[in-house]
Image (cartoon, rainbow, N blue to C red; front, side, top):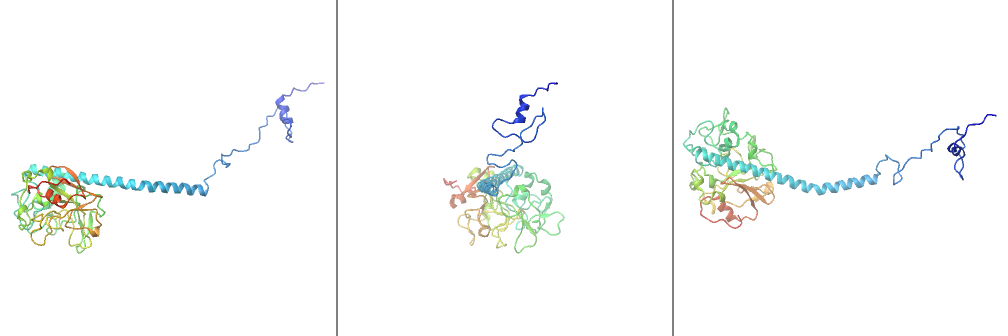
Length: 357
């Protein structure tokens, strides 16, 4: 009688089951390896893998993200404000160096304004009053060649009887306010766009965020203000170049509820709050002639509707950037007294600056 093949202990185990437990009723062929049934895996919380968040968990995550955004937003705003302040400071630095380069070329600073009221007053001194490029205009126009804007400088000409520079080939004399300024004349901290619609005037007006100090740079526009109706040089600033402001900050359009004042046109060559000039009082301490207000202290980030066109405006919280005649840039704080502010604007009054400078 033939002998049956030997059966392994593992096969017998599969057929009979473990001791003390019921066996699988399904017969198993000899030599077949039977795998245990798949029971699946579960996470620590008992859920099957791949399942999504519950609604409560999703709400918790959203709440955490909202809190983080709320914490980070002020920090992001501070970083952006600091970047804008640095960029404005860099622009003033370029303008201050441009003043020095122009001074070295023509042996005098570009005046704050020259124009219609005195056709013989030109920059450079003794130049043709009706020329291209223009020889009568705003301080910033004369600085264009020294901030890599030669092409823009050559687009304008001087025309007899015009208040301001005239666009070459233009149809009207002195109507060039629709020409955008270079970026060096703009500060990103200003809430208004560079081109604004001024109430009572047609067309857009292109503005700047800086103003030249008439006391330090002189002017050839108004004979009434004889004290600084002059060409100024480094030697004029007997109080020291590092103690005299060259340019200050200002809103592009100040007191916009009254469009007759406070527009800071970068090509305007007049004297007054409606033009691109500052500290134009004949006597900066008392206000002469009668009706003038003297040099008032600056404002710091005022609301546009509360902006005073007779003042400079700090465009950054608590501080304002200013350039000095020595080519440097520094910040002025809201703690500066009016007396110190007046003295640092006048280049030759012989007064000692206060400890708050």
